[in-house]
Picture (cartoon, rainbow, N blue to C red):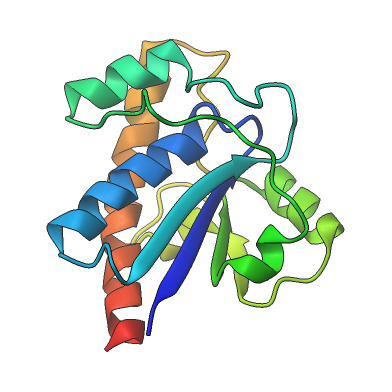
Length: 156
């Protein structure tokens, strides 16, 4: 048995690639990379083919995550049936995903997996200062740990 997870934000250059990289690191450390498929995408098309935001890359690198190889792509209706979990970073993107069609698996907010969520949505750091990128990492790290626990239980 295997499971697949797609992280989704607006442009796929800040929050969702960070979630992809952090969660991939957690999955590899757990030795489950052959059982959990991970990807990220954006609801918008502005950044297709581009690397993650350089500020996000710098913040992630300070914590040992390499976002440089990742490239933005736009989510498709087919993704809703191709992934077991489609996790949006905020309600606006969740609504955009719902407008694409019906999901065959779990469609919801990433922060729903946080054990004690301080916020319901992962804030978009794009127009803010450097601290916003660290806040994203804090939220993503904690939520990724909880998501991995949930998937371990599903995988048995």
